[in-house]
Length: 358
Image (cartoon, helix red, strand yellow):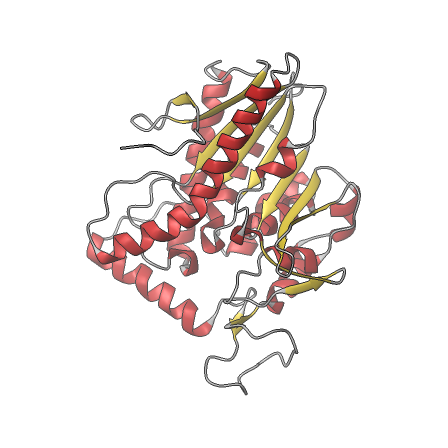
């Protein structure tokens, strides 16, 4: 159990809808190692996870996350043959697209303008996201979230001005509407009006909200663990499904790459001999079994597998930190991630702002 550290700890959680259960498993490993973040920033599914974490005492967080994802743990299920597992995942995705997800969202205008089960007057969308508000009110103590540690920041985007928007418990009370706004991915879910601004899913603009954390200077060294739900690199697509999956991944993962490259360039230009930031980028990389529409596969079997994957990846990263393979306290910005050829090891990486010329 870590009782004191020579650095402040922040956690950044990206969007990814049903893939967000990977972050819950990663957080369980973080808590197992006594690593309590002082600050959590989240977008979309990451904002939902962050709200559940910040809105509960430490002893109840994992249980609440399991309630959110309807993922109870237990013995690992035996692997299914690839073809059967693909059919199972595809069916789970289609079932969600047709019937929604209890406690999160329900279909809206699919069968005509009369189909509006909750009878609200929000802007048109395929699904109604108000069930998420009921779930958040049940799983999150918002009074605790706004008064106790960890500090919480939630990202969204202003649909009219195009500006990135951040809500922070240090300066602004956060409620269920702020979380819903962060998760309102158009046109699946309706935008949410907060404070007179029409807001949508942060993933449209900044799926991994690193900027919120890194833009604030700290006198102490900072260790920032960023959990991304979509892989930046992958093998060549072989099928139409592979191509569709890869397109989806790159729409969001390249945002993270550009953000990290921009921050590295800024730190290099400033040359601050005192400021020290270490980013551990942990991504849900092994998605060979995932299918097109994976973000809508909420099946328990898939959720359990993603939870275990997140837990294992974070445990490996923290083991590398414990062995001293990750250097903290070094001036400037250092970025580490699991090694591409040996995921149980880490490598220090740089991201370039320049295009790769052939």
